[in-house]
Amino acid sequence: MESGLRGKDAGECHVTALTLCCPLGRVRVSGCENGVHDIQIQMEATPAAGGCVASEGPDETPAAVRLCADWLQAYFSDPQATEGLPMPPFHHPLLLGETFTSRVLQTLLREVKVGQTVSYKRLAEMAGNGRAVRAVGGAMRRNPVPLLVPCHRVISSSGQSGSYMGGKGNHLKQWLLAHERARGVKG
Image 1 (cartoon, rainbow, N blue to C red):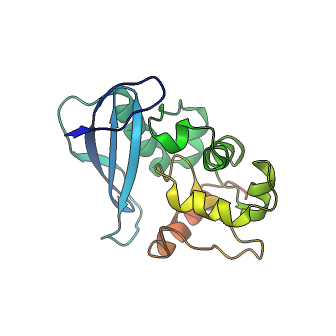
Image 2: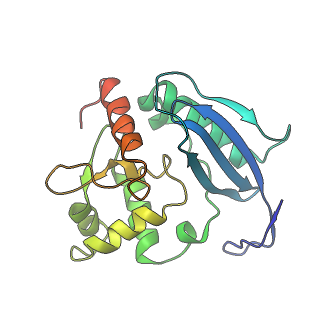
């Protein structure tokens, strides 16, 4: 499958997708030799404990897609284990640019660790504009790589979980937060 996605100083991409069966259901990772383009969580299943295995995809996948699959497998086995793993490179314009959205997503990735949560307001402050709470919500909605950039860890100032995947994935957000807490990590 071909894509016209272009990153910084990158040409045409040849996008490959790999589908994993995970506790959340089917998770599709797509990317090219330059990095991961996106992660799509297909919400047809009720979250449950279990492993994460590749179920569909070509025999040969780009190194970034394979690294992402390995990271996700480790996350679903023991979220704390991902702290020592390399993060796959990203190749999506929202993560490569110099926009506020990119800054929010990069700040979330860098600063909010497994088992922690942060409010939309605090994340706006951390990204350099404490008044941009709504823009942070927009960045979470546009996050092309959920799970890797942990938008499920962003909650409202009142402590409520807030919306996940446009409100359709709130049960997944609750499961992800509980999965991280169940592994003995304090938030």
